[in-house]
Image (cartoon, rainbow, N blue to C red; front, top):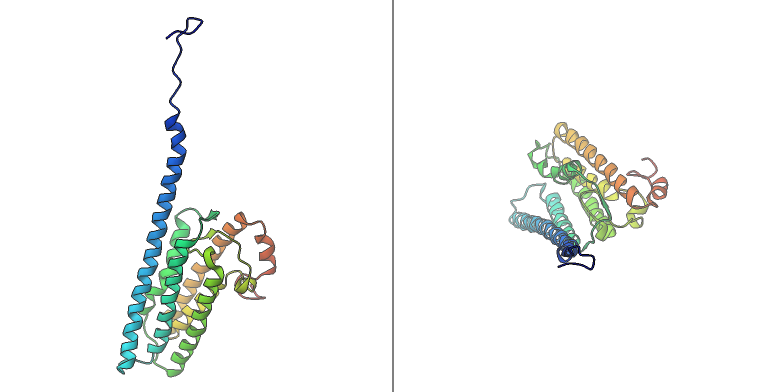
Length: 245
């Protein structure tokens, strides 16, 4: 076909595929995020179910008189773990997408180490079976696990394992320290370790605290990037120990 000047009129490029690319990409990304979210939620619900089976086993052992002195601390811990995993599974499904997150493999590896290192505690050599240690362990676990649940509920849909930012929470336990969940989790780990030989338990605790401190530092960088108000909050609120650090 020729135009008025005799030059051939070139056909316009098809606009359809170009306009469709963005919606398709967004839909693909949303679907991928949904699948990851559902898989993560299912994982924690599976952990909750496994812990519930442990609770049943301990209750049967206690009722039959076959349980040792460490049964009650273990039962308290397992009941709280069931609630903890169940709440996390629900939060992962309901929470919004983060506005900022830590990137790279390092934060993921630190998260795995900090979250699942406690699974290796039963491999440590047992300590002396002293009733006072089991009573102290049970008391620490009862208080710390209750505080873990309270802190998790206070954090709500802002909770994440890998450092991510959704909403700056500064109320409840977060008005006392910036990382209360890490604090009470370490208290729970310390309570469990009372039942094990201190030559193995103490290095384990030091290593675990070191990993958690690094996670805190990465989390703070993400929050500083996402929320301008975080700097003022950090100035007036201790990181982990009120009035000390």
